Length: 585
Image 1 (cartoon, rainbow, N blue to C red):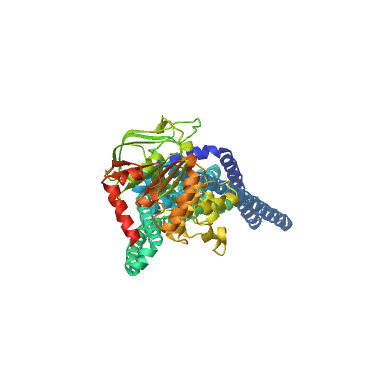
Image 2: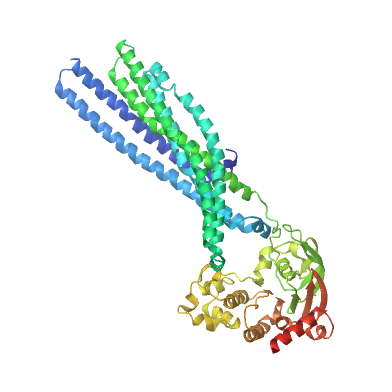
């Protein structure tokens, strides 16, 4: 139960609703327990008539009709308050589910990129959906039925003791056996629930990856192999669920058996006490039978509730596992930080934690506000890492990055990223309209601003060619568009922000040379007062930059303007001549 303590803050948040629910539950159970008393009283009326203690048949009929009306009234009032009880507790559980999902999602957003490299998307999705749903069953139905059962036990057993203490003792005798059985079964359920949730995460992850990579699966013709792997995983998950179901299935038969045994005790012991005169009225035995059967469902729910609690704890442990992880990148500055765009790398070294690969080694360079710097190098040389560090997606291992002569860690992280327009190498678009994907960079943008951004990214003509134009809904990750169109929409999304710093990570690799020249011409006009980083494997993309650095194995091996670099032997000149000859061919 320790893991479920995390939910205490939500119980405090909704304490008044829960208190009202408790009061309503007590009222509902009190009226429900009146029914056996009235039924017992009716039996006593009939018994007295049979024994000639009452001879007026009209009096008997009046008494029975009155009791019938009282039973109907008690049942209706109990039903009404039971309805209110469910409305109170179940609504609170939905509120807590909403709060918990938001807490998990917000924490996911705070966690650093290393977290997402180490954890699969399917598992993350399962914890915020299936695991939270299991927890909701605890904060809703489990608590509701627990309160209902406890209230009913206190009221019913208290009343039973007041009218027949000895018979009550025999009636509740099976309950200790029930408690021990529940405890042992709960331990088994807890272990098996944890395994079930883990396999559900694996199943979700496999499914998510298969759907995301369906193009590769079809292209390689491995549908049958993928289906086989899914079937194996699904069968294993099924077996784990069956193991859990077998344990859970023991609860209800056990409950019914013990309640049935209690009924036998009531009839046998109660009958003997009635015959020897210990119990004076036959209606008492009838009341006890009704009370015992009234306790049947609450006692049965003890096992069900115990199962829910065990599953909820297993799920909450999984949720807490991620909630307890602290983000590596934190924002320690509260005051707003204006960003002009001067960027300075001072002996920066960076090593990826997950691979231990040192991507940058003692990198130093400076870019002033309004300047454009081109970064050229082989694949894996560390070009993209430089951009990631500027956006503070990672923190440097050693050295220092200064923005406007201030260490990057001393800047307000929100202000820093608000002033950066980033176009990643792998353009990611959301399953939304093209317009909203562009407005993602600036939610308050007008239609004219969206159109101008698209025109500057040379994608406007493509968009208006679609039947729904800017309202065209894209598939997952923008699959509706071609590679070049996705890159250009991403560029439009970045420039519409009008940020101080623009980061372009090889974002023109999928467009033709003519389109590239047009985009670069537009970017030169847009970025006059902005600091611009252009990462590229093409010389044509970086040649107009104010400064170009060449990266190899995480180190700067060349630096200068395009004209300076092509005059000196080295990687840049070789790349230029190679690409020039390919263009001529």
